[in-house]
Amino acid sequence: MSALNEYIIKSGNKQYKLIKGQKCLVDKLNCNTGDIIDLPLLFSTENGYNPSVIKCKVVNAKQKGDKIVIFKKNRRKNYDRKTGYRHLYSCIELA
Image (cartoon, rainbow, N blue to C red; front, side):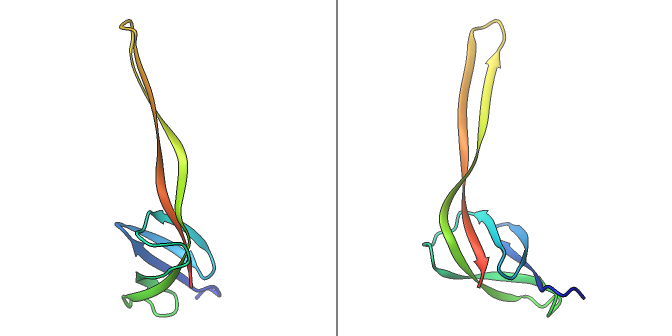
């Protein structure tokens, strides 16, 4: 057993490995900054594979990720298009 309690939670369709007090970026949640939310707990080093819920605090409800650049080009046709995309995240912390 490790000295730190590790937790695996599920948010959306993804799983995240966290330690108490660690902040994590998850896909945008429909809540406000400072809210306490319940997320499914899949595994913890204390309880093992005992599915339950765990309380998480929303540190920042709306945060933008890095820009992803989409560039389309057809050579010799004078065609090029450049657009960008920034994914929205929520920052959570185990309460």
